[in-house]
Structure formats: C-alpha cells, structure tokens
Image (cartoon, rainbow, N blue to C red; front, side, top):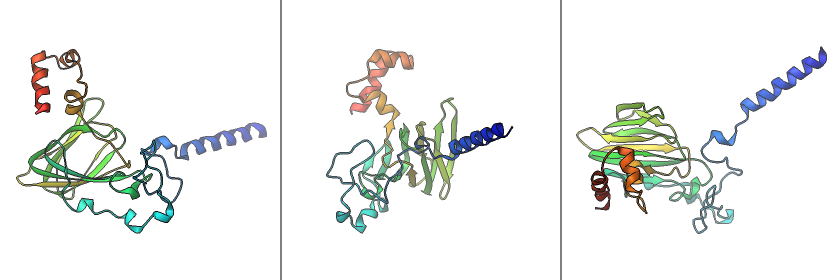
Length: 222
C-alpha cells in the first residue's frame, strides 16, 4: 500500500510540473537568456533576432524610441499611415518578444484584411471612431465600433481589419507579443505576388472567370 501511495504522489508531482512549466510554445518569441540583447543592426538578422551589440557599445538611447510620437511613413491599405516600433527600428526590443505600432486613419481610411503570422495584437483607440473586427477559423466575424479609450484584441494569425467610420481622423496604438510580428495583406498576397498566382487557381477559388481576376490584378499594378 505504501508503494502504491508513493507512486501516486510521484505521478501527481509530475503532472503539476507539466502544468506549471512555461513551455516555449506558449509565447510568440523565445524567452531571453540575459537582461537584454540590444540589436546589432550591422549584423544579419537570424532565426531569433539580431546578434547582441557588445555591452561596451550599449547606451541608454538604445532603450528609448520616439518614432510613435508622430504619424508613420508606411502606407497600408487606403488612407492609413503606420509607424512601427519593432526590432528593426528600435534595437532595444531585440529578444524581448514585444513591439508596437501607431496607425493614423484619414476619413474612411481602411487597413484591409490581413494577418500577423507571429503575434497576437492588442490595441486602444486614441482618437476617432473605428470599426474593428477579426474572423475565426470557423468563419465567424467578431466586430465592433470603438471610440477613444476602448480596446480590442486580435488573436494570433487570424484575419482582421480596421475601418474609420467617423467623420474625422482616427488614431490607434497597438502592441504585439513579438519583436517582429510580420504583416500579410490578404489582397496583396493573392493578387500582387511575384511570380503571380496562376489564374486557374484564383478562378477556381473565387468561382469567376479570367477577366475578373485580370481586372482585379490590374488594380494592384497601378
């Protein structure tokens, strides 16, 4: 009886260890192995980020960034400018598993359906009124119109969008649980690849003829 009781306790202990051990798969990026690893942008980006800059060359400025204090210079979708604070613009983020972005919307501005393959996204509306939403793998749309101070979350890898439905400008700040979340626009991925996806794939996918696919593709070459 004592032997059986001891085995039961050992099994329970093993189960508790498995439950409370933070496996790497639970986070988007690997956990850091040191206090910090400021990115050496003169080196080549590798699997887990940039190599660390020598500590003797690290300064306080590596841990501060003012790029989100103004509108970004990356055009995404229609009438939207985005500024990114990721490992490629903010070296102090290297290996820390997080990044941020700012998006400024003109009236009716749209960030079209897209995904972030390496991160979930959480954001807050700073100004204006936005319709935001995402689509589950069961093809269910979850969406809501948000105003200043309200937050949203998009699960990792799911298609999502944001549309300015107010009368004026709108602005959001977002955070990702990856130092480089990546962006894959659905429309661009389908109609602006190099080389192009064969027409027979797209015509069968959308149940339309070649003329429709060619017309849509021409819009992305303009």
